[in-house]
Length: 385
Image (cartoon, rainbow, N blue to C red; front, side, top):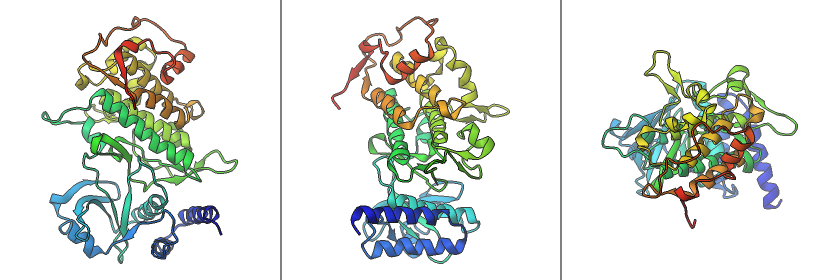
């Protein structure tokens, strides 16, 4: 069997494994991944196995001082592997409950075969007894949410250029899952806290415990129990449980709005929790109000046309009807163009543009989003990259 056929067999096997249920099946599949890695025939499947003792030592017995954060299925610690000296992130799953075990299995399977610069790398795992732990590369700058919300006074907010770079990188990670993985993968839990930042604010998608294999053949969706994070779920998924690739595009639109506005997906400072998308809907209909959407922490330091383009992309991603949302590849094209334009705050007046009462047709706004309508050439500096 050649490498191509072997890869196809493995992907089909993972697909079948993933759809099985039950703790007995999980134990079998975890061992299966381990055996594939050990005999050297696993291709991209290269996750290491760790003992619980090794990971306890790496995290100083899971010391509170090493705690990085908590999620729906467990806690994440910073650790140092004694064998290599490598700094890592160790996720310890709760030992009670089927969902945590299932999320562990999904992450091992997904991240063992999915590799991209904008996806966090899985180093290995531990499945000693009832212990379930994952070991990832350590992301020194934390999550995107850490840099957007509830910033302490001494923390520098993200500038416009960095925000667009993060948006483009996160979109590229999602594009890999949708368009390059075979079968496609629906991430299902895209949110600012799941976008981790490496040195240079390089974004990587993390936490694949809720990921699902996408529809194949003539199927248009995957029916599943509604899971995810309130404020990010696409309306059709929340109401019907029908999950599509466009469900992820909606969630990405929420994250893009967070990057532009600095607001949380759900603002609990309001009595009933203000939904960011509900807040933005009226704004999308009145371009004269677009400047009011920009994060106040930017202090006006952004290219006005870039702001309009970014909001136009967010608007398209957040369309109520899934079919009218763009494929993620189109979003990548638009945001890569935006990210390649370096805003110079010392350049010409960034606030001047067409009058606030100027209206654009739907086609004009599509052109604006993909950069084909850009009178703002004097306010951005193209890079050589």
